Image (cartoon, rainbow, N blue to C red; front, side, top):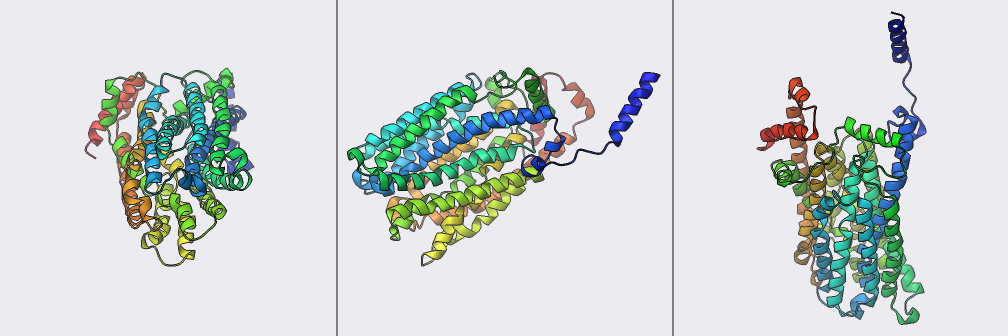
Amino acid sequence: MAVSVTTTSAAAAAEASPPPKKTLRSYIWDTDSHLKSPEERRLLLKLDLAILIISCFGFFMKFLDQTNMISAYISGMREDLGMLGNEYTYATTAYTVGYAIMQVPSTLIVQKIPPAIWLGAMEVGWGIWTFAQAGMSSPAQLYAFRFLVGLFEASFSPVVLYVIGGWYTKTELAKRTTLFQITAPLGAAFSGYLQAAVYEGLDGKNGLAGWRWLYIICGIMTVPVGVGTFFFFPDTPYKKKPWFLTNEEHAIAIKRVQDIGIAPPAKITLRTFTRILSRWRIYAFVFGYVLYGCSSLAGGFFGIWLKSAGFSVVNSNVIPSGAWLISGFLSLSWGYLSDITKSRFTWVIIPLILGLIPNGILAVWPPGVPLKQFAFLTVGVQLMPGVFYAWAHEVCRDDNEERAIVASSMNGMSYAILAWLPIIIFPQTMAPDFRYGFPTSFGLLIGAIFAVILIHILVKREEKLKAAVSPATHLETAGSGSEKKDSGEDIDAKTAGL
């Protein structure tokens, strides 16, 4: 009896104690930081240092390598390689084809090979191919090198997103995914500044043009990041314990993901693919993301327009950096707001609606410089890939393999379409007004808005169906992971016609 009284008194005292006060970290980082134990906060700090630093540096270099072609093109490569027609567009397509091919396979490969080993090897490889581009002498060589760079770079984004989605909760995921994603515009912005500095300081040095030095410098910068990936990038929590976590921290990490319903890995069989393909998720998310991705091409032609408008080589490299910095700031803002409000749909649809303004201006192509410059500078307002991916990861969190394949298919199918779409709507012979490209981008953006609304409707309907499952069904399926997926397939049968 005494034990019972003591226990009851302790419980009553715990209930009467006031909730923890919010700390500064709760306002500037995770909104529930004050509710987490010191051990959980230490776990998150270690994960952030390992995952975010490596992934952000790697993605920064990926986009620096990806966008340095436009910097090289307007800094002398066009003339040196005799690119007088649509060679730039063809080179972009070669890169995109290589990039699209490895999206889905990479997330399946890391189910067997640790991500640190796979990504480290791929990053060192793309650094070597980037370095090799300094020796190009013809457009044909450019096509080959761009294909290889795209092939080796392709694994980085889908694998990192898969790993991030396997560690973090709803109040943590979007901002971290966004932090990873905004290093893309930062890399693109830095490319302009780097090429401007190289052009002024190294052009002609040792008989090499400035654009060739750009590739040399980028290759040298990329390889060390790949080496660092070998040592610090973790696998998902259900697999091998990262060397930098204690056993207690690893146990906390597993409990965290179990509590929010992130499924452990399962054996990949034919049934894995039939299960995924029988659900609406892969079709809706891929379709919506493809429309969004294909509507976001306009910003890549800012430098070409500036050069045609009479701006110097240096200014044509530097001014577009402002657009990338603006889009990076806004993308981070969308991620923070998404985590604070715990809403993904809201912070996907709002940027898309705002994007109608600059895309509409470019579609009309008004006379004069100021309005077009405003449109190019702000066209990145619609970029929120981190929130979009966080949404897909959370919807698919009950199936590890679906979570991996859906996210990689979103990016892969988008790049597959982008492999040929720019050739049709953005041929270099139509520069700088691209009378097919900008109006098409505007139309695709409108389509993306409707697709995102459809995804939201499907998510809500699935949530209602899951809530309607009887408690008895939950008890019956509380056993093995395979049994849980069978229960999910029962729900999928009801939602297949949605």
